[in-house]
Image 1 (cartoon, helix red, strand yellow):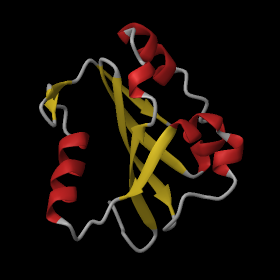
Image 2 (cartoon, rainbow, N blue to C red):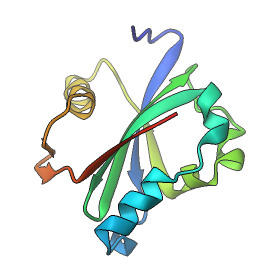
Image 3 (tube, helix red, strand yellow):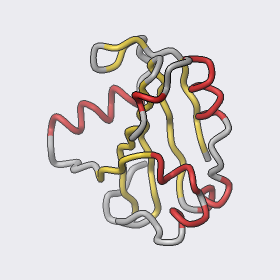
Image 4 (cartoon, helix red, strand yellow):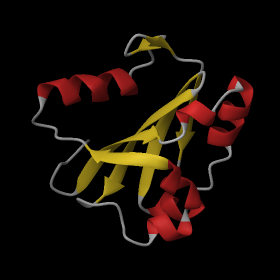
Length: 116
């Protein structure tokens, strides 16, 4: 069960959606994200919408561990935003990302990947 005192939720959004022109390549890129070092700190769900990539991650603690960006280069390719669980709109977004929906924020989900 989620405990906001011991862990935190983070949204990630690709910084380079404009460069993601071939859908199957985007899916492969997300599938092969090098997050091996992160498995002791986090797990996440990544959604691919054609050229756009978004994700939701759960991290131990209130911040993303400092060394993670150095060890997991792929993390630098995303904009990370801590979820404010007291914000109702963000709660709704978290629930929509966790649920298996066909659409998210008006876009069709092409592929889903779980990372750990």
